[in-house]
Length: 379
Image (cartoon, rainbow, N blue to C red; front, side, top):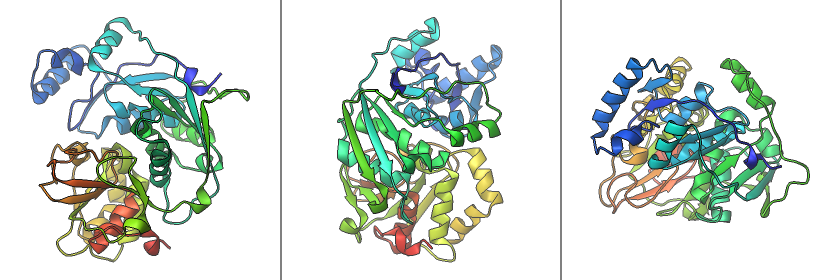
């Protein structure tokens, strides 16, 4: 048995953010209603029928799912957003599906899924200073390619992975879909159990791969030698070590989204920027991944450090990651971002360019006004 064969029904959760990432969205999208009308109708519908798991203006839906214990080991989670696969960080078979398919799930409580083949990715060693989980997954994107794992399960293992905090694990599983994968699974362990226990979740089962599980391919990587990675326009698998593109011009930097706006990301950026100022003319936008993270970052003084450095703090949302608001790029502008996609037109103009990197690399680049190596700023 492989982790990808685990299937168990979960519950309905409604989350409203910048866009409406809801299961119930399907019904209204058929009617071609505007997004704000859908949000209003859904809010009233949830109230009318006593839906308790309704979240609005709390942040991107995947982070809210994680914070509230809706991703649990050995469960099946489906959502109408491709980055639902972030739940794989908890050992859940979490995957994105289409809106029409979600309508069937809502009506029947069932779904048809083909059991995917699995690719095993092993990371051993200790991450050097200034290198993070985002660098791991960008390296994987380069190795496997943007379609190299289409409808497959990525199963991560190794002591590098087992030593990662949940924040970092979610970054990796979140971007499994950028390789075409159906799910990105990380084994549930004591770190997972501790995270869930702190939010009051104890009702779940932990299943692990059999010793003789078969994989279509296995990648072995040594994190001791990993360096900061940057995905260049316009593909997530167009990845280069930071020293190969250091000095490339940028106009804007962005730290946020369900991929790169968690507390550890903000903390890493603050370490780079503390007692410093971003480059003249540079725009640095910070969007914490949730309201809880926003409040924690205030209490810990992280947002103050970032704001003092010249950053603009914006509300927790999908925001610029999906080109919705606050910092949308004009033609010719270049942005380095801690988000998950750099497709043409993703953040605004089709003539803009987006680079992807860790929050620390984004912060270092904002500091210098060009793509920069964060390692020189990490103690």
